[in-house]
Image (tube, rainbow, N blue to C red; front, side, top):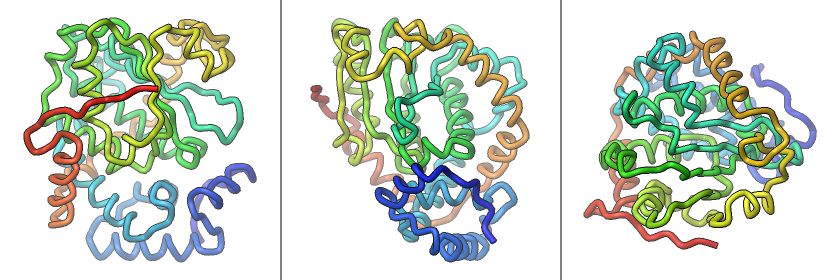
Length: 315
């Protein structure tokens, strides 16, 4: 019998309607994937049924897509040791980055079947204290926990709020093209978490370079999502998201974002063993011609063969 956390009837309906989930077929799908993993030597204790159901849901129960995404998940993480390794949430350097609060998942939605909100506060990345890879490291730690624990995010997806307040030339100087390319694959093509929309907040004057870089990180599928730019700040943002869903720093009624960050610091520490095990799993190379082809194709799709960024249009 599969060991999958039960979800509410509302989430079941969404999974059935939007993700092709059929409860009567889950066990057989899991068996196929587990058998395939064992044949490839990729089965291990932390790759449990809850881990696999996230990929099945993220791939709308296409077994071939699941296999490809899992291979890509393993290999791209292997190729990013500066992001995936040395991610102990009790390490002082890692704690310092966690407390910067660059990546902050928000707890509430209007309806229990809405996509979850995820704020990225780019300007809170302190270039004097850490590297861009260090920031992404904490982001992957948070994503690993969300993938494991947040059924609403796995089933309903996420909406990204990209806050560009305080972004400087120093931040842009940290962006290495090769690293960006691989992180784009890690967070989109290799992740079961689905992007449902993007809201860009506080775009500074002359922000075309930053926005084009961000556009270059979007997969082909995500380029078709709704992208909104909020030039008028919080008033415009509140037309899409009730203040009930936002922390007080964003004109909302939730507690301070610093308190949410502290809660996530504790959650990451509580899941320390799991995060270390995930890093250990990613220390093994996956040999597959498909993986190499997929990574190269994803890089070309996002950046073009000449490494240039695509233009971004807004609503």
